[in-house]
Image (tube, rainbow, N blue to C red):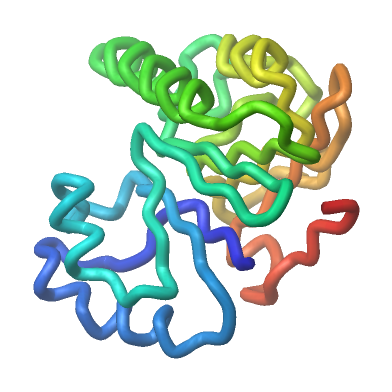
Length: 188
């Protein structure tokens, strides 16, 4: 399976994103996606599902299971307390709503899984390992791995995102950080 944590297409409307969906669909394997902050085309989950090829599965207030591995996720948002980027007045409200969506997604995972993975677009930790409140939810549900992107190359050293904190392994997989090469997440 391939996890794609958002910013799938620059399209503004779902119909304009069809070439990008076709590209994803033609790639081998099952792809699981979450919404990114630039995915303006993303509307209701039912419309997104209808537009996607069968091999692409969207996460929004839900989860998927492959064998003994469960994947939950949401877009998340800028956590003003982490100070990773400039937050606006509305960011706190959006952050709280996304925390609720994360709880819904995690709550939809069945029991008895071997591994639990969270995938979000926005980072749940800072470069020095400080945790957002979203990490509390991950611990509550016994998650093992958190995959995220969003941050783009600049003057910061993003290697600090790749760490294990309190039993959860955090994997930063922003496309430009990885030179547009998929990252193999072992141990699953």
